[in-house]
Length: 275
Image (cartoon, rainbow, N blue to C red; front, side, top):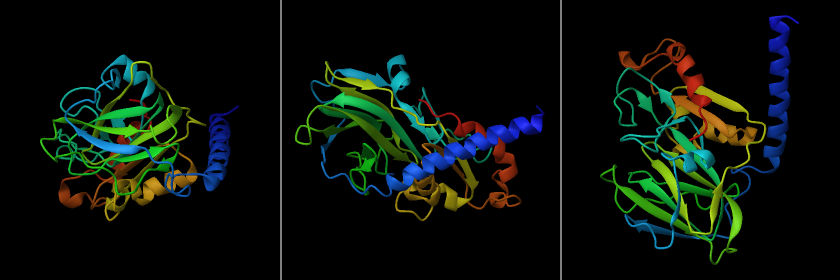
C-alpha cells in the first residue's frame, strides 16, 4: 500500500468517526441539552478549603494528572501559571497567560468523574467567571467569580454541593475556564473519589484564526463560534488558536505570528489534552 493510500484510509476513518460523533451530538451536546435542572448549591468559599474535603487531586501531583483531563490546549503543570491552559503561541512575547512568551489562553475545559456529595474546586483569582457543567449540562451561563479578582496568584475554592440534588452519585464534572482563569485541583470527602472520564473516539481538532476564533465578541470565550462548533461536532479535544489582526499575511501590526507561522504550534497544542 502506498503512502497516499495509507493517508486516504486513515483520513476516511477520521471522517467516519467524526460523522458518528456529530450524529450523537445532534441529540445531546451542551448547546442543545439546556441548563441542568437538578442544581447543586454553588458556594464561593474564599481562600479556605472547606472542612472535611481532605481527598485532593491536583494537577501538579500524580493523582490529579491521572484523572483530570484538559481540553483546549496545553496545561501548565508547575510554576506561577499552574492551572492555566495555553491555547496558542501568538508571538515571541506578550500573550494573556502572563508568561510574556506569547502564550495565549482562549477557552478550555477540565473534565473528571466525581463520586461525591460535595466537590470543592481549587482555582486562582481572576476577573473572569468560571463556568461549570454537570453530566454535559451547564449549571448556568453567567458563571461564578472568585471573591476577588486579584492577586491572581491567590488560590480560592468554589464548591458544588449535591446534598439536595441527588446526593452522592457518580457525575461528570466540567470546569470551563477562559483567559487567565486557572483551575488546578479538586477535593472531595475522605471516602469519596475522583476518576478519569471516558474519551469517546478521541477526535482532536484545532481552529486557526483571528480574534473571532479567539472568542472576541462572545459573552464568554466558551461561547465563541469555535467552541460552539466543536460541541455540535461532538469533539471534546478542541483548541482555539486565535489571535486578533492576524491572517495568512497580516501579522497583527508586526508583532504577531501569521497563520502559517502558527500552524505547527497550533496542532501540537491541540493534541495536549491531558493535565
